[in-house]
Length: 364
Image (cartoon, rainbow, N blue to C red; front, side):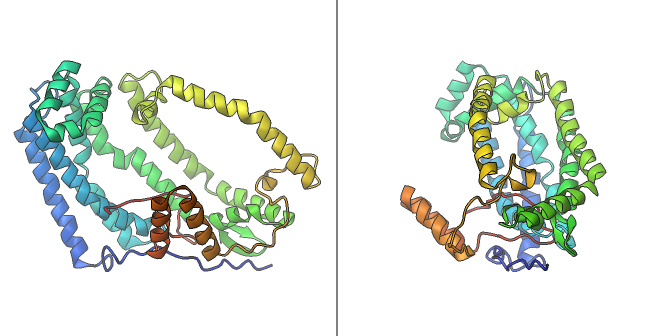
């Protein structure tokens, strides 16, 4: 059996730059480097560090300067990751990403300095600053979060070191996982297929196709199990070490803070999941009976349980999505139509492309 993957739409990148060798891209990267250096100089001139007096004008300048840098970095990051996320073997794109990572490296320590600077403010002092300046007032939520986050900061030197080491520690392990997993292939009925293509066969109507693809995918992942175990240990090891060093109760607490929820909210969400499990088990038992089995095998979880005469082409799916969005909101329908019309979507699996679904936004 030969499985031919249909050609699927790929996203456009030439609306930002003509290519990776575009002189405008090189020029914008150098301009960003200069902006980062100017921001560092601004922080030094304003004396932004733990324990220093906080003024409304200084805080407004720092926030405005940081926003300008992030505003310019966004499209560059989106453009370059549009290449490496769909082809991790693109050496030119990987080199540009490394350049961007290096020149934006000071932003991590600068954010830590800003957090430590405002961390000493009490409610009254912060409220006074919010009253004095419109820019500061526009960042009230961020500043209140910074005050809370500052309670868990390490010393300035330690925070600076952690931020500068991240690309080579947790960030580096994460990058390795993406690069290796995006090129992983498995043998399926005499063919070598990307694991993303094997995963897509989980919904094939033929039960033997599903089972063969399932075993092929597991075998493919097993060939790199040492690498992936090291990646997970590296990422979680950094997170756990920093959480303990910063005084968090456990490794979950930093995630709760960064997502703006408390432990009670997380516990309630988890309780809702547990409460729904009987419904899911009942559904899976019914699905197994529909497929003529006593219990579902793993490769049957996404199996179709009925017959359909509808042929879902990509175009039909796009039209369906837009129509459903419009049923909820005209603006959301317009957004979906624009995404399809302007080729914002890279749809199909292929060699070098990372698995999963994600969105990456530059500057609109």
